[in-house]
Image (cartoon, rainbow, N blue to C red; front, side, top):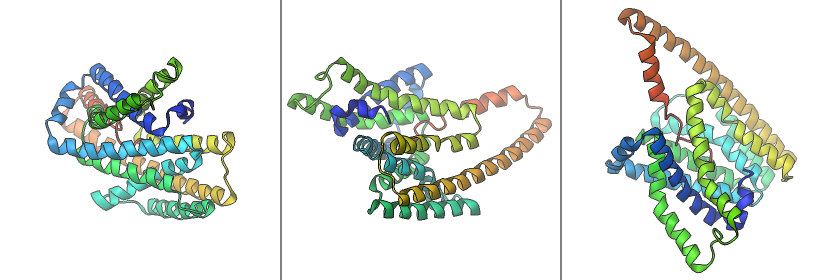
Length: 312
């Protein structure tokens, strides 16, 4: 969040175009480093999957643009509300589309968050369009990504690949008409804009690595750290106005998320115990060694989370 104001001279549209282009470059670098070329080629040979990833690319790119606009127009607090709502909206997509089930406490949390959003809207005097746009776009992104079941690095590379021609054309138009800032405002500005690709790719890779290192329940709770820090920076450091109604709305959202996260951790703990029990019984019956199972599990989890519903 603190990065985007450093390059606000470029404007949200130019920043978005460069973010797409440089994200593709860094994705290709990571693809080479992780040896994901076969997966990428396999995806490109499946037109239906490429089409779905193109839809995901549009949703993610628009979400990026909305987020950049929010930060550069002093609406950080409102954008943090959208990031808080992403996990809950994604859960509702799972229920509506994939027939997943929420436990009673999770339904309570979702209902509480919906009511809290209304309270925040009253505080703003209007619907929080940026927050609603972010959570809606990322819910669509999660839905399409789950449909494709594409490997993380390869899938995200295809998404960037689909958007890059349009982004390159726009960057070229800006340069031709003299409206571009990259290469014009000095090397520092240019280097910071180029770094937007790194600022995008590294968190995604780190998210995937975190899933390998920590229980998924812990990862699910940690995803609320980002919007919390953004809210605190917006309210306490950037002095964005947060009236009593907004504080009340955010407090209600925090309570709802706490209920949701606690129930999620409890559910994951029960599932892990059951899974270990089944694994132990299977190991005793088949005499399977632990090392092959561990290798298989790590291979399956290696890309989990990258290119999923990660905050913008």
